[in-house]
Length: 497
Image 1: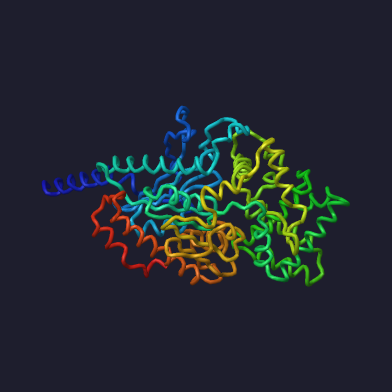
Image 2 (image 1 turned 120 degrees about the horizontal axis):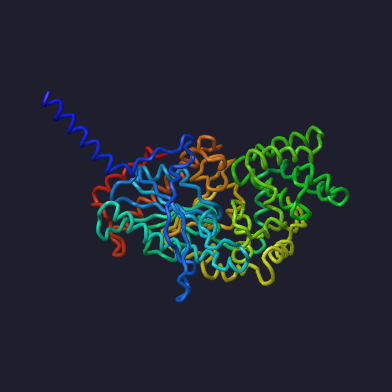
């Protein structure tokens, strides 16, 4: 009886010890598995990093996920971009974190979601919304979290190796962070990273035509012509047909229709768009009605787009809300990066009425006089597609129109890979196929060429492995874990395809 009691007591003490030490590490994802964690954490962040006299601060939201973390291992910073950050998505970065024994952290972009410095988003209050301020947010967070994880594990002045990840605009931030703060990260993955600010982005529409193929492209061009004609004779009816009667500005409506088509190629669902359109064209059905079905059923339905995103009256709303991201991103477009998706002079898919002047008028109407994108200064500051950093790996999907604002030429210091397949779009390396909705752990089985995805992922793993190991010899990076512990984990890549 004494032995049983002693064993029971020992077991209870062991369980209590384990729960006290490890309880913060093991949080099962939500039942749908879309997020590794949605537990909010906060830090105090400076509103203006460039002012020596303005010491105002705001609360900035972030997340951490430590289930795969081995003490002293890497910290993977997954940058949130131009929308509310609701947690750490369970995409391919989760696989990488598990492989490398890494902590995963994610910082919400200033102004978006719950990280707004102001209660009102008037243009004057948006002057601190820029990529430059966001990069300093990341640098401050990196130092803050390093101290935080040291305290969590009772370590003194330990310095974990950091690696930065991002997709799209946050992919550009990932590249720019490594460029501007090379001493704070061992490297970065810049997935579909739009590092080149573009004033007249005609290559965007040209890629849509190429990705669509001859038959689908011809159908889309005919639809554009027919809708343009119907807008002149009975604009209210054609807008109502697409569920967009609220768009009073005709070119706002045309932009909405162009974006609806773009989404199919950008996010890996080309057949959802092209199959019914080609069928309607060959069988003599009404093309405009066929396209309206796609827009309402897929773009507004399954994909979840909102018509009001294209309404300039909505964009002028300065109230902080769940829909504020629309206004905020347009401000960044109108003040810094442009990416004006204008119609090419010849062979355009979108309406030729979507031109440079339309975009400039939108910027003026929504934000007032004097707001325009100085893309030359942006590219001068970061380098555009001639970015001159090191240890940045660029990845792009072959069907993604945004790849023409990325870095597509490769070099030893800045390797670049194109994932070639029928439905490889925006962020395929991290998201799999299609790129929306989320595929758990970036499942690539539904890509038309899973092997193409696996091949590039293997290259990414090799670069992360190499660059983390090179950090060991850097005087600016100190590992908390012994070299042998980390090194022994990084040799076999074959099971992570």
